[in-house]
Image (cartoon, rainbow, N blue to C red):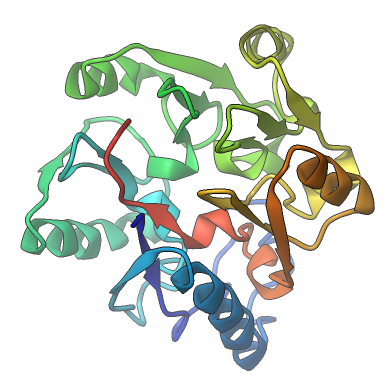
Length: 266
């Protein structure tokens, strides 16, 4: 059974501004509603995966976004995130302690790197890295040395999609759901040349984080999205479920941001 890491949103809030989604949303989180939204997603994920939980910290309101904690590979190995913004750097010690105390070998890098927020793996095992806002392009050599494989880099150009997982979702059977407008021309070309089948979402769906989705086996769990996205996922044979994650979107995240894949690198 697949394993994922989540964090209960006990202290989730927007108390600083480090991405365009947070602007104007300081202390506008309905915490009760956020907990209800998280619980519904958590229950669905528990139905098809083993969910590990890390304890939240009241000084780390974004810790609920566990996808940013790091990148897991080759069994129990983790590349720990090195957050760009000081507001999130306190999370690093909590994730380090969690992984090391659960038998993981924790690797670190010297430049900014934000885990599965910016590094994702497709169904064929290729590793993709988004740079431009949070993860430093200069970290690529370190990451390739740790992983022992080539990393395909993509350049993000719109600050609304500041992490790769907000606009790029590799699907379990080899397709890709993505928002082309988040990438520069060279990255768009690289993506189109690599993936035979794509769902190219429109801006409105991208703004509702349709690409920030959790994929488990044949299940794709997305935020609320359009009938077009629902139709395409169904056409490709996926069991698609939607979740209202509006409170988390105020902080710049949705389904995938709340879930870190801790399965073995394929």
